[in-house]
Amino acid sequence: PSRAAKVLMVGAGGIGCELLKTLALSGFSDIHVIDLDTIEVSNLNRQFLFRKSHVGQSKAHVARDAILKFRPNINIESHHANVKDAQFNVDFFKQFNVVLNGLDNLDARRHVNRLCLAAEVPLVESGTTGFLGQVTVHVKGKTECYECQPKPIPKSYPVCTITSTPSKFVHCIVWAKELLFAKLFGDKNQDNDLNVHSKDGSSSKLDVFERDVDEDLDQYAQRIYDHVFGYNIEVALENEETWKNRRRPNPVYIRDTLPEAVKQNGSSWDCSNDHEEPSAMASLGLTNPQEIWTLAENSRVLLEAFKLFFEKREKEIGNLVFDKDDQLAVEFVTAAANIRAHSFGIPLHSLFEAKGVAGNIVHAVATTNAIIAGLIVIEAIKVLQDDYKNYRMTYCLEHPTKKLLLMPVEPFEPNPSCYVCSETPLLLDVNTKVTKLKEVIDKIIKSKLGMNLPLVMIGSTLVFEDGDGLEEDEAANYALNLEKVLAELPAPVINGTKLTVEDFQQELSCSINIKHREEFDEEKEPDGMVLSGWSAPVEKQINSNGENKSAASSSSARATDDTVEDPSKPGMKRKLDELLETKENCDASSSAQVVEDDDDCTMLDGNPALIKKKRLQ
Image (cartoon, rainbow, N blue to C red; front, side, top):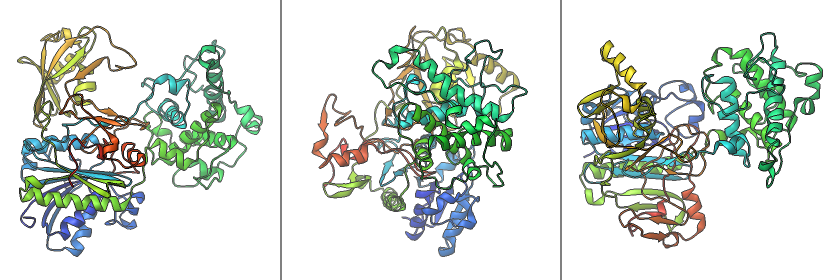
């Protein structure tokens, strides 16, 4: 079947390179590849179709060229594009016999799942993280779709832990990245929980982070340093209640850590930096990223990185977002996190370790990608032969479980309450008198339901439509609706109203029943609305940054301490011990985390040893 089959491969990274090679060598001769990414140096340790000379070029195009060198007679079409682009619509998907995913993010996976359902094309989904991997098969009407089961979401931390009472290094990283870096270099209009009021209170400035007109960079950097590491800690110490059962933090001031900098009113080190990419480490002659810096070194790195941003990258300030591949940003965040950690008695970490925490990096293993790619091709062949009874979801484990490293499981049937493939209505608790339509679209329809170009109807009244091709007056009208509260829309949304939401590109439609509710718990329900009746994501351990890099491949079971509930049998719980020989296995699988340094990794959502159905012998 493979010779005649037309295959779509989405993703040409870690899994994608191995997959394209295995498809070509297995006799597949008509393959399309989509990938929006370009090749980076860090890809070269595992994406073996690429060489150093290819850095900066399209992954899809280079992968195609590399395969054609040893399989010149097959047809490979490469697309350097985003799979969510309008050109890759349902009709595009319909031309393929099977779609194979090697993606790195939840958003794109959900999008492909919906297009495959609409086009009725089988999907083989995959993901790896370190030594762990999984391959799952999704066929409309026969197996569950990719969204039938809950997905893990990034761990978030209470604001008070981050701003006032950090106890782990990750708390300091989140503070340095999400608060300090964002405040100084990011969008000025963003909400930020840092204290911006200065000590004397008489300052004409409302925001201490604003630079004075006549203030030189050294003075500005030192003033910010003293404010966040000194004054803000003193303010926190004033609340005696907080420190009754906690170790009290120590304020850190620049005059104590770098007395020479204050005396000279400027840096006492050489700031010449002729490097292509500005780097505080390079300026200061620090060469080893695995070395743990002293408090003084961290302070120097912080001030130097601060200055380099203003001197060499001033144009970017105001719209910078932390990126783990941005050396200067990593230096700044590492130094800031370490100074804060010192204050709170938390052990300091090297730049290498801090980068891993800040970027949620789990280092990729080429062998895992190769094994997973092989399993994808095996499942694709079964799908093309319509060998439904032998479809398997396969989990690749780090440690043997019942003497197996590859654990095959029969696929599950579609979840009848899945809003994607079973079109079950959802329920939204919301205060219809204060919540704007815009909030529902952003927080629920786009963020939680993953729709890109939504259309919202109340009965037969169209209240919002997204996308190109709208008439000017229509677009203006919808823009007005966005700012209205639900109860004041042209067709009022009140308790019991039914919304119909559609995405034409995904050919997905679902209903949301509205339940009016006055009050919400700010800590537990921060959105001010609660969506139910769908597979709400299960929270995982630590993924500090909340970026959508966290990707989850199809889930099969949810690990909750040592038991798992079987959704098909309410209340029935199974002990882990049935399938696990050691606690070590459990830790290896259930704490699997996103994500490696760029592209093919995923959080495994659920311990493969906790599968709902009996493991196949």
